[in-house]
Amino acid sequence: MEQTAAVVVLSIDGLGARYLGPYGNTSLNTPGFNRLASQGVLFENVWASTNHGDNPRSWYWDLLLHHSPLQNVLQGPPFPEVQHWTAVLDEEVIADWCENYFEEVIRVPRLEPSAPAGSLEETQLATFFAVALERLQQVEPGDFLLLHSRGLTFPWDAPLAYREALRGEGDPPPPTEVSYGLGYYPEVDPDVLLGWQQAYGAQVMVLDELLEHFADQLQELDHPVAWVLTSPRGFPLGEHGFLGPSADCWYDEAMHVPLLLGDPRIKEPARVPTLIEAKCWMDFVQEIWMKRTETNYPILPNREEEVLFGDFSTGVVRTHSWKFIRNPDGQCELYVKPDDRWEKNNVADRCRDLIPLFDDLDDKMKVPGSKLPPELSRAVQ
Image 1: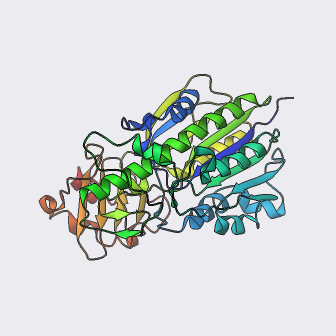
Image 2: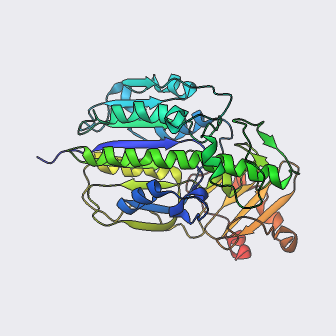
Image 3: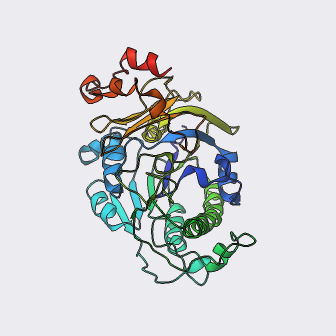
């Protein structure tokens, strides 16, 4: 009888897709991410379904509880092949919540450093991975193992040598701070922005080294394992004035997240350009549990001009070819996708006749699965 694959989900908070080699970043060397991408399926255009700002717990509530078999775990999982539900976390708030739904919750102590670590082994990420990989060694067929780390959120305790490696000729010395005040900084010195980028990039490099051990451990298991690597949200670094997660930041640096899947049924790596929501990885997990044999990933809809995500009450909509933002002060922004990758060219002022069409979207799209009003779709084209 065919074994049911174990499912391992590695979630790293604050990990934006744009900082990874497989997603086109050339300023950071990420062989660990490259390796995993070469072994699985990489989704190029995955977007956090909603903006949870500084509350990742709500992401788990939406994703795991309302979109997965976990909604019935207290009455018994609907997939009998699932043997054991385990979570390893270094985020206390999420760990408290997971106590209600997982059979086993392993808490990794949080370090509170005031300075960068002296070595990779002393970092918070290394502490987390040490516990996570030990539990990964014990995973059995049919298990569900969630590994969640605060990862790329503060503190940024990567050794200074990692920051120095990102310092270019003529750049000022990298900062030594491990934490900053989250918020909106509309005017920031370029050297300060550079320092944020160096400190964040150093964290990515530490994570990348640890992912090599994660990949090694997966290969050493003697039974089928399906794995997911993703993040609930990105981490803005001043691109539009925001530092860190914010409920007011709907730009791509906050919303574009990585999604890599490893599937025992897939023999060749693949890249999927389809625009999808981050929560679609739970559909993939359900496929594993239901032992489907097809490998064409029916989780991928033909989205085209369908709404990918939106907080319609405040007027934020993302589709395949454009993105609309209505800010709290009433100012509107419209970006052409995918051409304007960094959302630097706001064309709303040149499309003033379109703006009224975005009014009352909340009322127009209350029914799940609603499409955009035809007159709006035609006008934006």
